[in-house]
Length: 194
Image 1 (cartoon, one colour):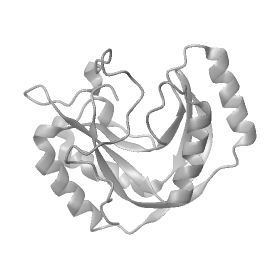
Image 2 (cartoon, rainbow, N blue to C red):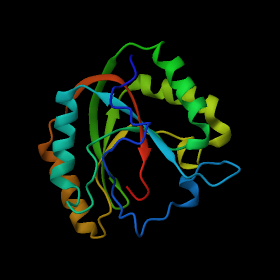
Image 3 (tube, rainbow, N blue to C red):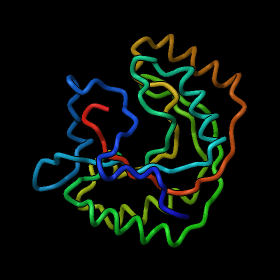
């Protein structure tokens, strides 16, 4: 497995996320455990082939609130890696990708989130990748990043539970699944609130 060309570690523009930067504050359990506040944090995701990525992103675009949907579909291994540890993080990723070839991924069952719908992903090697990196990074990982469940978030930030239930039912009935290939890892700069 090769590092992705889409790695965004030098401040290049990246996709945005679900919150507005002016109002967003990270929860304590989503903050890296470092001695100093972090001015930059990074997200590590799985990279997949284009056809699979497009299929799952199309599903997300159909159901995620339009005004909040700033990202394409993704599977995040870690969501709050501290910028102060960037050389350590990059070294670990470089070491790891030398040990892996590409591997298969397939979508599984949709499930309810508190305010949306997720889609399980069957991608067993990702669990091993997560455990390997967690062992190296555990001193500075956020509470959220201490565990990993491979999934895509198809819908989130929806307050109306009837909308969530309708989405879950629709995805269960109409989405036929997608299979693809994990081709690498991407490290993105987390833009405050996105």
